[in-house]
Structures are given as structure tokens and as C-alpha cells.
Image 1 (tube, rainbow, N blue to C red):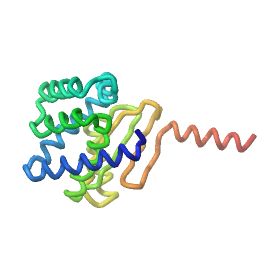
Image 2: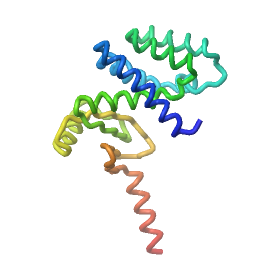
Image 3: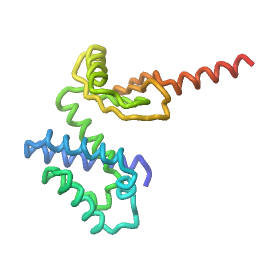
Image 4: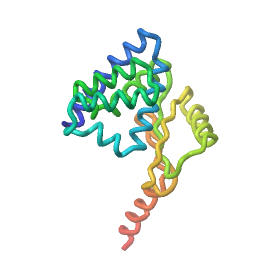
Length: 184
């Protein structure tokens, strides 16, 4: 399935979930569940395979996500939503749904969303300092989503809206390599 189509599907499902959660006053509860779910996807290769598996039937996928939702103590709305995605064979779009939902929630609150990829895990103090620096740079509340990407070697890549600051060692080495090619 092309990623553009997956993005459209993710937006539609995220919009439906957001409106339903808003009408039930459960925006923050669902957001917490989705953030936990995103961390689970990031940390588990088996879970990623489950989401993308064409071999599993709708019923098997539904049972798997129901068991996961129960074990993680997700809200009923989140658990039902995961069941719907499994039933409609849309679990592959789950990461897009999560990102779109969290983006809508941030927009509703007047927050900016920042994604940060760092070479090593950041401590809570470092994350707080980063959020504070972004707040002063952009003049508002910034919701920070931090991921670890060891391929960066060192430093971090920060994206806020259409702006990106890449201070990773990997990029600096690539620039140095290009500069050295130009000399010789």
C-alpha cells in the first residue's frame, strides 16, 4: 500500500478517534494510551510484525490487540479502536494514526510538536532542558517526542513543524567527507 494512501487512511481514523474522544472527554486518556502504544511499537519487533502481518486473520489480529489492550490497561475507547483497526485490517496505519491524533491534540491546545532523535537516551533533566529551550525559541508550549537513533553516532536531530536542526555527528561526518572529496 503506498504511503500516501496510508497517510490519508491514518488521518481519517485519527480524526474519528479524536472527535469521539473529545465528545467523551477522554482526549488525554486516549493520548496517554497512544503514547504508550507508540513506545511499545518502537521497542518490540514482534509487535511491529503483528501490525504488518498479512498472514494473521482479522480475528487473530483482533484477539492479539485485545489482549495487549487488556494487559496495558488501556481505556475502553482505545481498546475498541484497536479492535476496529484490526477488524478493518488497518493496523499497519497505526503509527500514522497515533502521530495524527497527537498532532491534532497539540493543535487544539496551541502546542507545537517537536520530534527529537538522539544518538543516546536523554535523561528527564535533558528532556526538560530541551523542552525549555524549544519553548523560548518558538514562543509557546512544545510537546517533545524523543526517540533514540544509534545511527546518528552522536548529537541529535530536532524537527519542529517544517524546521529541522541536524546537529548529529553522522551528518557532520558526511559534510566533512563531501568537503574532502572536493579538495582532492
